[in-house]
Each structure stands twice: as structure tokens, then as C-alpha cells.
Length: 264
Image (cartoon, rainbow, N blue to C red; front, side):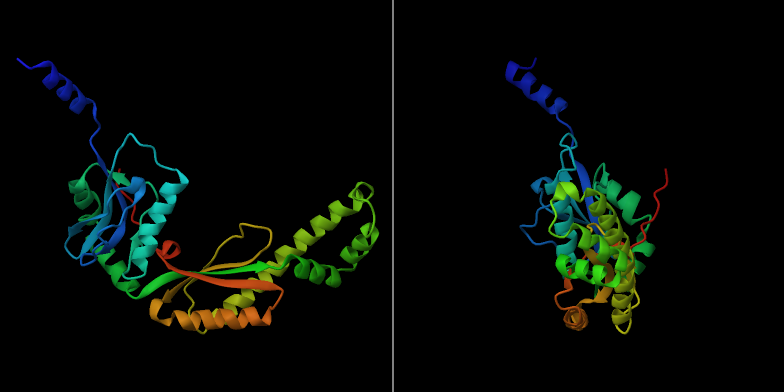
């Protein structure tokens, strides 16, 4: 016969949900996480190995919801930190399996050769983001100077109260927005041409802000990062006070990994 304390402990154990395994990405089997590395929900990062490959994982509580900004940041932090030192195949945010055996059975064993080949191709490479942002005053002046219609509309509203110039401001804004699309396409082509001597492994991303000039993801050798930065720096010098340019990275190669389809 169980005591009251024993019964309470038994009920608590039955009510608790077993931890599940969150998977961040696939790496070579010899990769080891830093001892204090933590991921989603501040859980310690572990390695599950199979053959020549391994998965970066952590235990999480299935009853604790995923999707907070901190969760997304933790997911990216683990993958991008790994990309500094080793090739990594990132999995989508929220990839969860039941246990460590399932990581091997459903992921590593089933796709071992495919993953190993992809990691081999990525050895020494990482993703870099080339980002350009228009200097608002400069780009508006450029568009107005090149458009008689925009110039006339601007002259109409100059030094006039805003409430009296609504009929001119709306078409002026639309004209500038439309012109900006064409300018962005031209500047993106110019950037791709500047990058072409270095690499043709690029992906053009859609703008996320009206003032975005260029957003290009590049798969590039980590030990040649200075060459990439020099090329972008030269372009920034050409566009002085017109477009501000940045190189972000190295990060995990999100744009350049084709993930296998899981069988239902």
C-alpha cells in the first residue's frame, strides 16, 4: 500500500509531459557545442551522432509554447554561431521529434548520404547578406531631378500648408514609390555585377522596407570574407551619401540548403 506522499509523487510523474527533442540543424559528426551553449527555452545544446553526421539538439518541454521572439533568436544564434566554425544545414524553426532515437531514425539515418554530401560542399562556406539602404533625402532628390512630373508636383506643394496640398502629395508619393522600384532593380543589378567576379552563388531577397536598395544573400568562403567586404566597400564609395552598404555574416546558409521532404 502506498503512502500519501508516494501517491502524490506518482500522480505528479504521470501528469508531467515527457521532454521532446528540438532539432536546430545538421553538422559533421566531429562538431562539439560549447559547454555553456543554450538554445530554445535556455536548454543546453547537445549532439546526436550517426555515421559521419550529427544533429544539434536540445530537450524542451512540449507544453511550453514555441514562437516567441526569444525562441527565434535562440534558434538563429545556435545556427549562426556554428556557421563561424563548421558547415551547418539549418532546419526550419520549430522542428521537433519525440526522442533521440527518432532523431537518428527519422532524420540522420534516412538522409545520411544526402546530408553528408551537402555538408562536404558547404565546407568553408557560409551565408553573407549584402544590404543597401537608401539615404532618403538623396534618393528622393535623384528621382525628382530625373522626373519632370515629380519636379512639377514638388514645386506645387513647396512652402504650402499640408492640408492644402493633399491632391499633389498623394500622386507625388505614388510616383516616387514606382520610380524607386525601378531604381532598386537597377542598383541590385549593379551590385550583382560587382559581385560576379567573386561568386555567382547568390539569391536576391525582396525588400522589407521602402528604403531598402539591395538585399542579396551570398554563399561565400569564410576565409575570403575580406575580399567580399572590399568589393562592397568599393561599391559603397561609388554610392557615397546615396546608399549605405553593409555586409552581415557569416551566418548559416538558409538560402542555399534544399531540405529533404519527410515521408508521411
